[in-house]
Image (cartoon, rainbow, N blue to C red; front, side):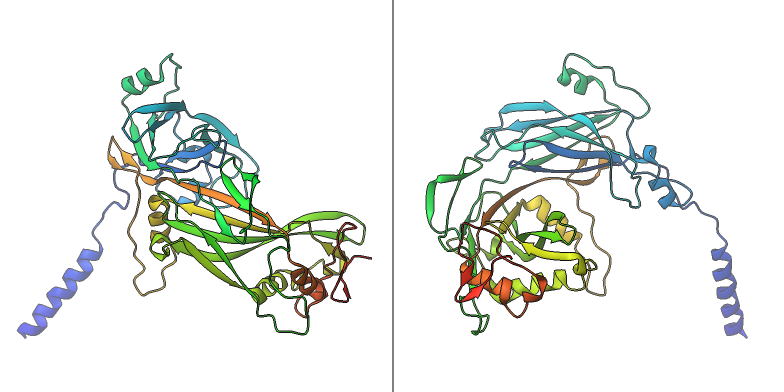
Amino acid sequence: MRTYFFSLILVVSFFSSCKTDFEINAPYEITPVVYGVLDQSLDTQYIKINKAFLGSGNNINYAAINDCTLFDSVLAVIEAYDNSGVLVDIDTLKEKIVVGIDPGIFYDDSQKVYYSTIPNRSQDYSGNYEFHLKVKAIPHVKWVDTDSVLDTLATHKLFSFNAITSLIEDNYVANPFNEYNNNDLFDGNWYYGIITNGVSFADNNLSTPLDDDFEIEWDETENGERYELVLRFHYIEQMTDLSTVSKYMDWNLGTKKTKDALSDGFVKTVDGIRFYEMISSNLDNYSLESQVLKRTFPAKPVEFILTVGNDILDTYMEVNEPVSGIVTERPIYTNINNDSYGTGAGIFASKYQCSRRVKMSDGSILELCSGLITAQYKFCYDTTSALQVINGYDVGCD
């Protein structure tokens, strides 16, 4: 009897606890959200500055409202400090309204971003420079411009947040650019060479197996942690109505980390046959294939794109990678410091992107135009200044 009575108490207590009223939404505190990735190879840096939102209804509905995530007034500066901690440059971010945004959950009529001209490719920031983002945001108040940015930052203390990042140093892809020519420059700093017969995915014999491999090498760079390499193939489609459109397809060659570096840098080995399989997979089942008259390619159709991210960007991307295990909960990572309430959300980091375009070897062109994997896609060599017959095969356009 005692057991029954005790069980009844537990059941009653359980159902009673389910009826307890509570508020799902805690008191609202402004949380700044910043997304900014500095890239010294660019002339202009764009930064997104907004705030989190809270509502009692469907959050998807709130996300579609422009005002929900915007501060009414923002004053932001980027400061550059050298390795001695001396302020060497400062720039006030300016507003820009971006339109023509792809549809999504968030409002797509327009987006407000902020931009700065430091750092940029014309300035020399070699060495361990630090870049500080300092923001003052005042909800529900319009700014009145003052003569001094620093005075404004000091006097308006309603809401402030900041972040710090370092720059990625210049880097270069060494191979397949292994014949250096001092007349060839990239961004005024990066020497690269020309291979006389182009990058090779295949030999000049269609009857031999596609087993050509090639290596891409690049150096480890200061403050670089994450290295992503993409091969981009450029081509031109000419349709039956004689219209033309320039296109490209990207082949992600993977990511390497600083810990993967060898004594002389990084090496990535690429299987030649996979290049042609990549092209085939991109063009297979193309809905307008019947309207394609031919596909040609420029003199340098292959582009290698190397993007290097610093440790902040690498950590942020690692934390937000898809979860493959049974534990789906992941930590939240940010380097946005909210002076008013604690931490913010998002990141202020840096990356550096460089690219090289090269021609293809004769054997690679022959395989593209006449090989088993890609011959059906109407590639041809459309030029009068180069050999159009390779090992007895006519690869020229009619």
